[in-house]
Length: 504
Image 1 (cartoon, rainbow, N blue to C red):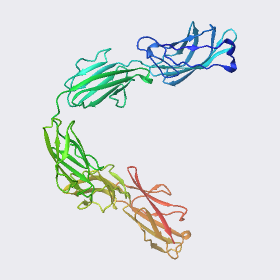
Image 2 (image 1 turned 60 degrees about the vertical axis):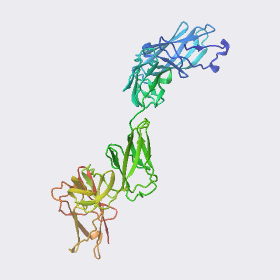
Image 3 (image 1 turned 90 degrees about the vertical axis):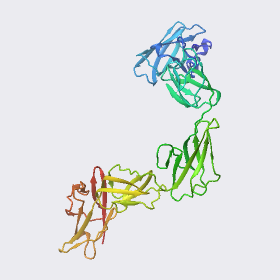
Image 4 (image 1 turned 30 degrees about the vertical axis):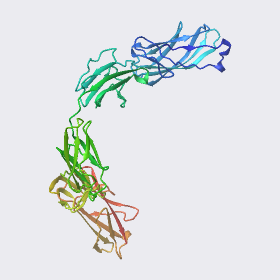
């Protein structure tokens, strides 16, 4: 097809105040492979067209034309395009870009076309040009396992596959990497797509749709598939109860399929006697049923899986436990933790019978077989923690807890009296009481923070920004509720701040 700009009205209707606006609607045909349709307002050309696009003109009245004020706008791509010129070439309008357009470039040219004899405007508008690869042919069409009766050939779009297996992967790859490829209406992917196919017994069809960018052209391929043999595979691929996570042959926090035995863990306190609904995925064509009726999982439960051939069968035994662990894995990253950890996430893990050694049960968050629990370490420094549950153990090593291991305080009045200050040390706010006879304006307060020897934890007094050696006293400046006094423990970018307050 060709694109044309029409000048239908008599000459006296073309006045500046009443300009007819016309936009291209069709495609410039530039040789083999040109699409049959295009988005409204676009002229689509292949990159091989180069930097000149010819737009046919339908000039019914034979006007001599003058093109003025062409303005180039780059809508997408167009990195190497810096200008444009437009001239009449007989019954065509030649649009020439400065530079070389590339695949995917979308360019707009705004222009005014006048009658050369009297200067009246015949057309004012914008021509949109998209450089698009029209190629919608496949270069690869391959099942695995299996084969097409006849291999992929140019210009051939219908294929046959006999004796197909129960399942196979089909790969379709386009010549044009920007084309969209979709197998059996699956979500389209650029350039190529691989999809798992599970054909039914007997004949069926597979459709592969290839679309050029902007949908300007498309091609449909079909494969007639015949599967003759029924499958004798009867496996449970995935098992889960209610809305909890499914288990497969890979071990996980909620269990595992091992041979014909399924171990499944549910949150602590779950009623195993009723209310549990299985969700089971089996091999293609296979079916399953529970050997005994009901929803009781307090003991072992058997499921029978029958293959598609109706003769091959397997019996699976499912054991469900509430809160027990098949294994313990402890997450130890990062090894430097803020002291203390305040939040805790309980996802149903059964704490009963769990032993934590090496912690006073406050503040380090770690993960045990998919369940996140929080424990605090009130004593900073290097720590090793061992977790034991259901006869399994795991060890956390290389952990450093950041914080102060001690803090003392004293007060001294101007009259020379000096007394220790009782201080509340946990968790973040350190509060002290000046007491009778001591007032902020005439009282000096000293605090002495400390950290474990060799821990590598730094102490910083934020009022002055100075580093404080462990065990050295700091005189608090500006004793007033308007000035916060913060002592910071820091290591490896992890910090813990202690805010000091007072009353009197």
